[in-house]
Length: 452
Image (tube, rainbow, N blue to C red; front, side, top):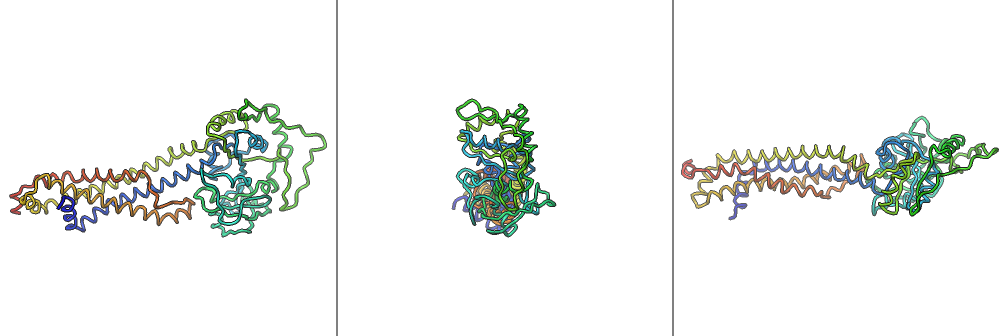
């Protein structure tokens, strides 16, 4: 009979005490697994949500606020930038996709963000190798059409053909009369897109009050022409393009067009339009790296690398929370190891006769020492196995609740690389736990043990 078989038999003789000590390890491991899996899922969600685009272009201000607002639909928009700037950007030879976003409005009750955009948005990979799928309907084509995220549709019970108004600037007391019709419902993505409502760009600017007044728009353009805010963006392979120039308004053309009837798509001049953000996919990472500082030098807009901003956020904030939780669960595992040590050490007094008989039958001191250490190892490994299974089972139970509340799709059977480190850590801990009881068994006096 080998050492582990003898150790296992000894554990079975003390089944209740052994089960409780192994359970304490299992609970510590389960908590560690839950922290690792959920943290890994959240980290991937934040980082992947930002990796679909090389740059986010928006008004000057906080780079992190621009990313949180444009990618995660959190925080308030900074300011808007001219639509003409977007038109110039999308014609640049280095740009593959330029997706405009208009943000600020919300659903009627203020729960979800309204995003004015173009149909091209649904053709672009929102994260590498993943494109939008529709559980129902289709993408936007024009007019007062809307595509809603999975959580929005579930929250309101919306289906194809449902109509809804929007609140101007999130002001629930100022709800537009126009209504948008749902033509598509996105399949769950596990990203912030699940809690957004996308409306067509033309429909957004067909709402009264969304276009900039002509006089204000022209005043801004004149300021730019005077050199206060030139729009400069170099083309790929060329040094620079000149600043954007807009012809001055001619006398007799200053009156605004007649208001369009409700629910009718109206033509709005480019100079009266603005965009909150522009999502850029460049031809290469290198071009994105080179273009960002050039855009930032101009006074009109800033270009932000979303991955860099989110990485900094995860490292500075989420990373500290993750470290704290890991330290806490690590302490729980250490306490569990101590409980195993106490259990085995206390059993030494009752096992002196058993150890003395083993020695009398020819077992060496080293053999007895190894059996005691093997018991500690078996208890810890058993706790690791049960804890890993329990941790994933708890994540499995929590996954639908987390998804319903936060749209984070958690795969409970996905393993994090850090989980592989738990086993060697548990093995080292078990050996340390078994050393002192093993030395106690090593020093048992055979004659005295037989007498007891």
